[in-house]
Length: 71
Ligand SMILES: [Zn+2]
Image (cartoon, rainbow, N blue to C red; front, side, top):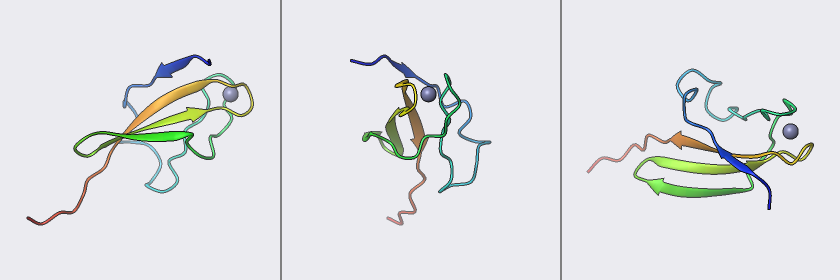
């Protein structure tokens, strides 16, 4: 089982634009291509599990998703 570190969403609001906000590995700086898994945490927050294919480092990112819902 690989080690998984949780990354606090400190860079969610000043990172790359939506659709190209791929994270980079904290160990080898390789760019993640696709999340291994995703989980809906609470209203508007989605957690992604990333695993680096180069070094195997795993981490989790959380993304706030603003849904356009008119009730
Ligand atoms: Zn890596």
